[in-house]
Image 1 (cartoon, rainbow, N blue to C red):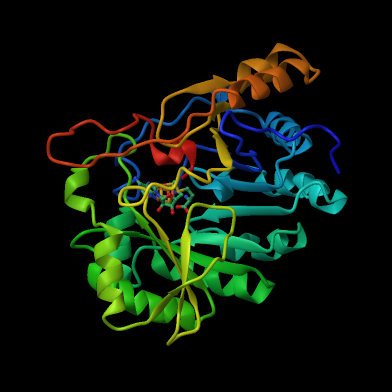
Image 2 (image 1 turned 120 degrees about the horizontal axis):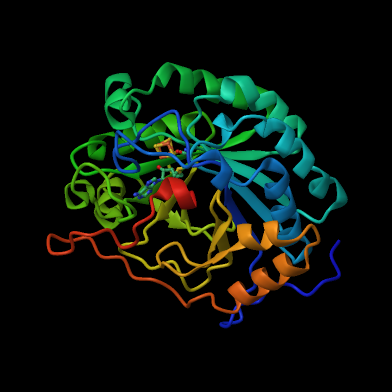
Length: 335
Ligand code: SAM
Ligand code: SF4
């Protein structure tokens, strides 16, 4: 366990949750997340796995208890499993409470067992439709079957799976209830996410934006949702669906600001620390990491950055706001 003081932001919120994007690359191109022709970062700009380990360890020593790996697609990074296996030492020591990841599921059939073996117990799998043709459309070329195989392997390995679905106007509006029944039928929680204006994409955000307040109202015509205090450390508000017995979460950054209890910060695969998903301010931890082999400069940079963590953000999606709220894609900061 760490004896060092926890990281506390200027508003008294302890930073106990770190999300790390381990790569900006992905094997899919979800239409709300990426443009079809993305230019990915040159390798030298991306933190090595050793640097990522140093960085995560520094945060854990400062009181981070929950670490989520994301991307891009975390499971397409070369040697990712050796990185995860190394990180699991912090679970063994008790310094870290949870090591988890958010994945598109395409590689799960290869890695589920090993993930469990490394101490991972829960994963989030992103999936916006149960229809193979629509899945191909929204991911631009993904194979739903492969993801389904991955889900089966995760269940078999003993991993708890939460399905994340982005609510997209005119795309999966009519599928939300079938997805809810499917997910709960398999014992998975389901969390619905509003699209956020992050990064330039090929289409118009306003054409994709579907307020979750509307989705929830239509779910409530069929199901009874009971607010529950369940928390996973993330921004979702959970309900229990009486008829299925399963949990349904809502991440509504547009209709419900989730900043109040924010306990997390994000690091990109280039080592930029973002203190808020919806703001541009950042700290360059790669420079700090590469400045010396010791961690003094790194620790100072982390502390200084946390002292600038803002109170919150406001997102706007409307016809008059043409530019994204922040220019970086979700695949950089990892959602
Ligand atoms: N590739 C992995 C995956 O898809 O789960 C991890 C990275 S992905 C950027 C993390 C989450 O962000 C996914 O659930 C994805 O659906 C969501 N996401 C991406 N772009 C988004 C946007 N503009 N608004 C809301 N959610 C978004
Ligand atoms: Fe890739 Fe995840 Fe973005 Fe889809 S949401 S393009 S799977 S990073």
